[in-house]
Image (cartoon, rainbow, N blue to C red):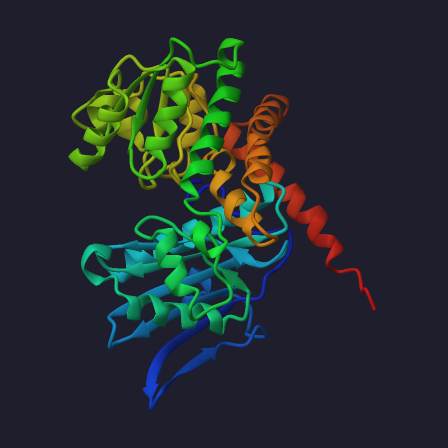
Length: 402
């Protein structure tokens, strides 16, 4: 979802909280201190730059634990439909500004993703700043778990880039509000399985809209990023008879995929990949994949991938539409992982979660229908669909139950 053009704001004014918390050793226990600006703060104006920056978010929490090196930000965008569910990204951001920008955009996207998927959940996200290969430890993850617990269920965490189900098991030793745990601990396991499956269903819907058939057989699909999600997507595409070309910044990831699927070929980088004669381009790495240079060079008729926040700036969605490229909105097609970990909250059933993820096919078709009827790009249509559900269902929360 584009960080600037179609931010989910929710159907009603949200309370805005900026919390700053840190764990401080206090004998055998840790003390969590949270300082919160009251919701009754004055209206947003230029005199309140911090609130202006977080407009649309209910709460943003900065977490620090010096002994473990933990620096994390938890952003709760909306709890209109339910508790905010979103993964924890562990990534070596250049600075805290980059981390903050990412978590704010990701949490907004989660609000729309949950709404479009028909879940009774809100949107939130967390980022841990640092290289997980060197910084991730049991003590750091457990310190992070205490911050998650301090939010008392307003935020539910799960896996994301740089974190895995095994990490969630560690976080869960300090917090009740953790999903995406290992199967051995009663969880859903690797959520990338159904994320990839949902993207594949969205791609089938896009193929039906573009070519009149839901099959990818004989189509050339370029997958940028073959990590946790991309490698599973490649498997679905190969099984469907597609010709697949991949690229990744990690040579080992490419080697793993090509060894598993000998017919898959590789491109040296994303710039080279998008210039190939593709039918479908699937961005499956980090956000901002669809920038001006990429769109100008793009040969594909369809863009449908797993990455979050693919549109680099406002207007890219219109540029794609003007060039005749059918864009399957990221937060619609990549909701399979959210569906998978959300199912865990009620006692996980893979079959039930997979059946629900299959509906991404129908949801994507509905987005295209709205786009055609309203005369807008699919990204705008997807926003409208999600906003309608937030408004209609969120209104019911105002009915007093006694």
